[in-house]
Structures are given as C-alpha cells and as structure tokens.
Image (cartoon, rainbow, N blue to C red):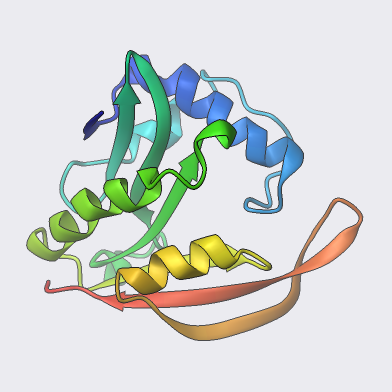
Length: 164
C-alpha cells in the first residue's frame, strides 16, 4: 500500500470511484456521472498546502482517495477546508479511509488549516465513526436537505479543530 498525492494520471480511477457513489449511494448529492475530463478542474484546486488530494494505491490500483478541498469560495474562509473520503466499493471496511486520514489530518495541522469540516449524508455510521476517530464533533444537522433516489436525506456537519 502506498499513500501519495493524487496526479492527473489518477483522475480516471478517482472518477470511477466517485461515479459509483453518484449512481449507487447517497454519500454524494451529485446525480449524474462525470468524465475524467470534466473532473480536471476539480483536481486543479489542490495546492499541496491546505488543499490536498491523497490516493491509496495498491498493486497499481487506486483503492480510495481523501481530500481537503475549498470550504467556501470567499477569501475569509481560506483557513477552513472540507474533507471527504471515497473508497472503491470493494475496499470498504479494510482501514483504507483511516490510513488516508492518518496522513491527511497531520498535514492539515501543519499547513495552516484552522478548521476542517465534513458533511455526511445520513445514515452513514462508518463515516461518522471515522470522523469521530479523528476528533471531529457534530455541530449541525440539516433535515431533508438533499433529494436523491426519490427521497430526502439529512446531513450532519462535523468539525475538527486543527493546529493552524
């Protein structure tokens, strides 16, 4: 297993992982598939400081990724990030998300991030447990905020104080 920064060469695998959740899960509220080309602008947001994207690679395959992306587009939010982790569906429950966050969270602590946020569509006990393990705490619950697969979903927001 190797955890490293994502590159443009990883974009097809990252996009395939994400598209699984677009089509089969409420973990994202995107409702249409993306092409790797459409996701190029998304990948370009990562600056290797506060905003990073890490991948877990094993035997040449990307098994998952974790990112700290822009929280909001306004300059005053620059020291806050939104984190997310997505795993290949056949890799869930193997500790890959934890391993990615074990690299990502210390990086945030040393690169000027003040707060990290995670928006988690419910139910998602595994994601709540993962974020809690890394000192995220629930700060808000938005009732029926997203509509996907013919129903409404609640979202919980979790926050982590970082050293920055």
